[in-house]
Each structure stands twice: as structure tokens, then as C-alpha cells.
Length: 361
Image (tube, rainbow, N blue to C red; front, side, top):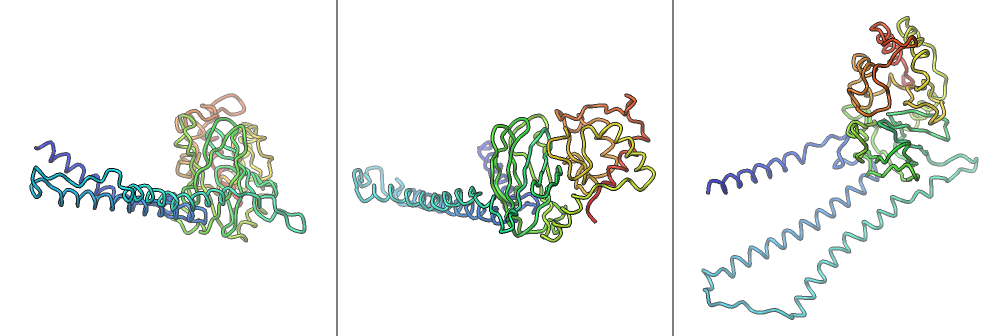
């Protein structure tokens, strides 16, 4: 008796938690708060599926309760034999036709949306001047970070994707190593990122990310890809077309030398120790460097994709990246040009320099 009561209380508690926690969504990462047409279409399919399943549950539950109440033995007696309906053409038609109708209700919009969201024929559309009508971004997944190339604009960045709002953005997805999965929960469903083929799709961003609490949408890797899979995050800044064009223009310019003395010292240390793996120019060709481009590091929302963006975390990351992101390709105990571990002064200088790398006003 006590065990049954305990189980019932546990069930009631879990049900209450399910109701309350279902409302704990964040705009920048919740699939239940769509921020684009693709996400809205997929959300509508989710609502449709929920309505159909709820309808089935309610109908079955009502029939079940009615059967228990109407045909209970205490009411009809032990000798009562229910009407036998075996072979009833009417009933067989009903319980065959109803599931078919429900499946059609689900299948037709789902199949239509699947083909519509996979239609990337407009990716290569050109204007009369021979320019691409739509923005295309080449996405390359790497252990454990993301590279974003804007081929028509000659711009390459990493970890933070910048896109214009109120227009389609097409993506070419490929992996440089193993399988990953590209996912911006608030803006659209996930798509596999494979090393052997390019997957293509499009997204639309209806909301400017500056309106969000963190100023960015969150992107995730949705494919188990190694010990730091959960930390393979990226961020998305969605801006209006004018601001996007300004960002592209700023990325196309060569970076200016550091202005402050400490940052200048860091720039020299970087040139002697880090430039072989990391670019600081937004026009460095994609794939040339082993590590992510740092051209916009000062504008980023996070260090290494998930650490709070400050100099202390940056210095800790440089000193011991494996502690924070196991399995990444940045070696532990990074040393300066003389082969010695970075001194505290060198770390301070590097942090000051990297934080000064900015193209946003």
C-alpha cells in the first residue's frame, strides 16, 4: 500500500514538473520559440502532430472510461455476455479508415515541408549583373569549432556566424574530420555535416539577435563527435542587411596594428608563436590555417565557444586548452618562440591583443 502511494506521489511530482519545465525556454536556443520561417514551419508541424496525438489519446481514454463504467460487472452481473462484434464490416472500416485519415493529415504537410525545405535551387540564382541573388555560407565543422566562409564576399570567420535578417541564407555543410551536425535550435532543424559529401539547406532569420538577452542565437553540434561534443558551440548574430554589409566591408579590410603598448607587445608575441595556426585577417582563405580565424575575437560572445568572454578565461584557455575542451587540436602548454611556457606578462599581452581584434563599431 505504502509503495503504491509513493509511486503515485512520484508520478504526480514528475507530471507537475513536466508542466512547469515545459515553459522554461530561452529565445536564443529554444525550438519552441521559432525565430525564422523554417523554424516556424517546423514548429507548425510539431503543433499539428501534437494535436493529432492528443486527439487520439482523448478518444481512446474516453472509450476506455466508458467501457469500464458502462460494462462493469457490479452493474451487469457475472452472467452478462457483451454483444459479439467479430466480423463487423462497419467497425472494421472505422478502425481502419480513421488511422489512415490521421496518417494523411500528418504525412501530406510533412512531405510537402520536407521537399520545400530541401529545395536549394535558388542558391545559384544570379542577377543580370552576374551576382548571386542570395547569400551563401560555406560551413566547415572541425574538432571542436566551426569555420564560416562567405565565398562571394571573400570573407572567412569562425565560431560566430553573422547573417542578414528577412532573407534566405543558404548553407553548404561539410566536415574536415568526422561526422558532426549543424543546428541552430531557434532558427531551424539540424542537418548532418559529413566529411564525404556536401549537404545543403537554407534558413531564414526573422529576428535581430541584438534583441536577445545574450545578443546571439546559440548553435550546437547535434552529433556525438568526441569528448568535447557538448562544448562544440557556435553563436549567430543576425543583423539587418545594412549592418551586415558594413560588417562584410570591415572584414574585407586589413587589420590595423595594435594601438596600445600592451596589445602591441601581444601582437609581436602572437606573430612569433601563434600566426602559424590562426589568422587575424578576415580575408585569409578558408582552410589555410589549422586553427580558427581570430579576426573578430574581440567581438565574440564566448571564449572557445562556451567560456565567458574575458581576459582571465582567455589566458586560462591559452595555457591549458585540453583542460577545458578535451580532444581539441590546440596543444597543451603552448610555448612562446623561445620554447618556454608563456610568462604571465606574455599572457597578459596576448589577451590584450586578441581582445583588440574587432571589426564592429
